[in-house]
Image (cartoon, rainbow, N blue to C red; front, side):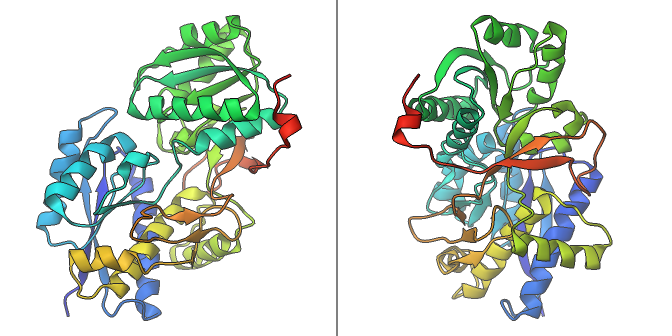
Length: 375
């Protein structure tokens, strides 16, 4: 009996341990789907690696996607980076027509054949960030943003969020996606009178901001996007973000996620108590249920099968987070706490195969109209 082929498009350079984690989490979900009768035959994951943005090119990503489609996969997971997914979506909808579930947060990822697991959301993350800063008592904010497609989408969302929360942006400093010397940008935000610092981007420059803060002797309250989730998979690691708050999807109170980790640990002998295996599990679980719903088992059948994935309990996010798709809803998670704010509290090296040394510090907490009025 032939296996069902599913593709995984990795457009970011991961270490061998992260690839191991990726495979272990997906295989757990696929094997459980077979054991539970969700699918009637094994699912085989085919990996394709490519060098996409911000270091590589979107051309490499599209060519990698084509190679997976040519292997006969019924669905593709990836790419991970929004700026690679935006041009890929146009190709998939117009030509490729194999259902694809991306990890990015841009609203521009959704299409007739394209879904998103919403590993963050460029319009929604700023709302949680501004709400966190408001509760921290920060009024005047300096913004460092990547002058890129996702950086500008983040910035538009953050401006709207600050208007809603009654906060003031006093500095906006653009940087490149691969910049490493952030001293000039950081100094400019402080000289503008910023009380707090915000970073909007994918994450490669973000791990260098603490160096700049140390050089000028500034230690403000600071929060970043889901770039917070990129740091563990860079050579600098989480210790480069000591003192930062950032948006995350790991919540110890989500019992679905803790149960997944229990089964993961029993099977693989290690416990990655962080967001990454849970995102992978939710992606693979969504795909398995779409395959189980497919009539017939073809790319088009699997695409339509995604519409039958409704109110599936999610491993990611806070308690009661759900996964639901529909013909005009191509994003995964539902629930106020699918994103939370965590803070780095460990100055030591950590491994993605374990605890990342963070603690949960904030959930979205609406303020009254009076509280939101500018002071």
